[in-house]
Amino acid sequence: MKKLLALLLTFVMALTLVGCSDSDDNYVMANVPKLVGINWFDRMGEGVVEYGEKSGYDTFQTGPTKADPALQVSSIEDVIAQGVDVLTVVPFSPEALEPVLKRAREEGIVVISHEASNQQNIDYDVEAFDNVAFGAHMMDNLAEATGGKGQYVIFVGGLTAKTHMEWAEGAQTRQEEAYPEMELVVERIESLEDSQVAYQKMKEVIQTYPDISGALGCAATDVAGVALAVEEAGLEDQVSIAGISLVSISEEYVERGTIHKISFWDPKDAALAMFAVAEKVLAGEEVKSGDDLGVPGYENVTVVGKVIYGNAWVDVDVSNMADYDF
Image (tube, rainbow, N blue to C red; front, top):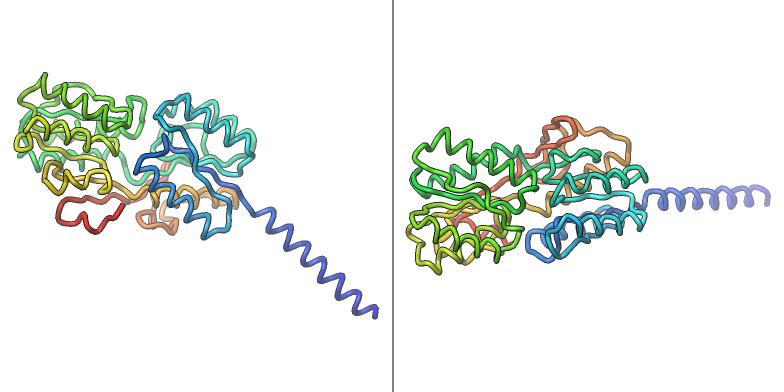
């Protein structure tokens, strides 16, 4: 009888320990992108859901419906108030988020950013690739379409969007070095991540620079807005367009040839990579160059300080866009 009671007691204690372990490891992870309700970040949200399903952790995405630093700060404050273990974030303005991210870390929250290589109050920043090299690559795509000649403009989602500005700088530097017959006619054009804003501003570009021959977009919605303005003006044969986008956003313009080529990384994979890094931090592990995060494009990362670089870009034109259904 005593042996039986001892066995029962041991069994109950084991169950209790298992229960405690499960509770301790039931992490809550939140992702706050620049804004919600657009295809790019809807796709990122799929990664958030997938990571939760695979890990068993509570993962969710929330954020502002407009690209506005103050609104993003408010969304992050709400997430902090919920007592999450992990905050992943795609900052619209890295500088504007520093105070609230500092507070999150002071409360013991692991903070991982994306598209913000200059962010300070983080554990790590995850980049899909080296940003300057990617900007140069997009310029090569645009020059391929323009024959390396003519006037062009560059759109960015925001002048405070660090990654967009790095792409733009990489693109312009590449143009100046490799395509001297091309000319940037105006400083960065801010679209606020809104295709309608890009559309209106491209109409102004066409009026001001009637000989314009190229446009490069750094926000996912830029090239679709630019393409609409170009088509309305009947300039499809004059103006070439390249840049960041998704097939779901730009498909009709790629099919018609108005957009020469789009480039992107899968935002779903970026979410998976951010959470994978966060889980390593929670486990007390350091991310090192050569590590495999278990996510396509992030199998052999390079780490410089707090910044983790993958190799995750792809190019899409009419010949292969059927392979990408997002």
